[in-house]
Length: 309
Image (tube, rainbow, N blue to C red):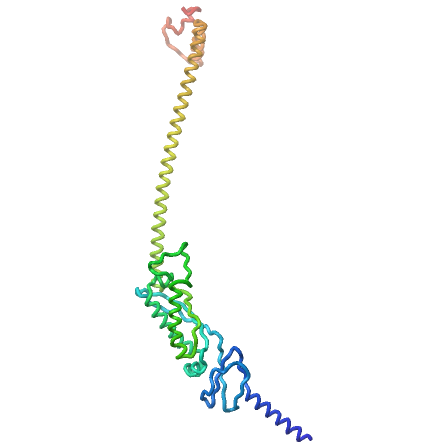
């Protein structure tokens, strides 16, 4: 019994080993091909459980999810022979497993990225070479005005058409030659080369400084106008105030003279006497005051005669 048990155990282990090596699973995120002694006998194997002959068939699995190729920035020329540094990325996935395997050194993703990158760069170079700088950067044709606020949607207009054209060109060769489908090609950034950027920034700075000088000059002109208007208003206001004060002073003097005249008419002798007393008081206010007059001067008429005669 012990010998039979051992035999059945060995047979069971062999059956399990044969089943393990004969069956394989393709994940839903994968695609696969089957080879017989290195020769492809089945391509684009669907996800699920499949069988193979051990030691005869070899199965190679590939990820069929989206692959992102982030390229290095490349220098392209527009149709105006102006240089641009273009940074882009590509998203692709396997479309034909058999073609992908044979065209890329046995399905090497690194090789596929290198070949695809060169194809994309060539397509971008041709596309940028057919467009002017303004159309490439803004996505607008030369006769199209900038939108309100100068806010440009870079995913619309001519830029979008350009990227669709690049995608169509790349896919026309990528599927047949590489067995892959390019899903999307996008430009992340468009910059001027460093040697051009410094000149552009210098020119922009010069333009801004010129604009600032213009604003300062206009501000000074407006300030001079405001000062002149203020000085004119001040002069007119002072002149009007002086005129009004003189009118008021003249009216007061006239009214005072009228009052004096009325009082003089009521008692002319007393008024003359009172005026003489005020004149004496005002003339001799200090100890050292001296007044040289003729003795019979009219100034002393009330001192010489109480009646002022």
